[in-house]
Image 1 (cartoon, rainbow, N blue to C red):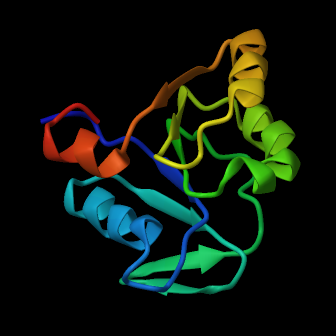
Image 2 (cartoon, rainbow, N blue to C red):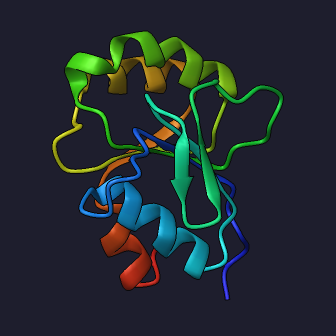
Length: 122
């Protein structure tokens, strides 16, 4: 079993049809602690969705569920967290953001969190 990886889900939604919601539940099922960040407060199972950006936490992985047009305000905040990696889920790809992550020494991948979990590569 892999070590639990504290994961920040950016773009978390209470809507059970949204991939951010499904991924949050699946991460918890796989034993990963989750911080859910979204536009509206709410709950995904037992996980609260916060509208406040996390402070002073050691984030292993940031998984993005917001498109490039809504990432601009988040880039500096994500880099400031110094996560080990950022996952760009389908539809969130952003080459300009990749360059900034490279400069900050933060790994990133274009991948689907759900697929990574299902194949044991998370």
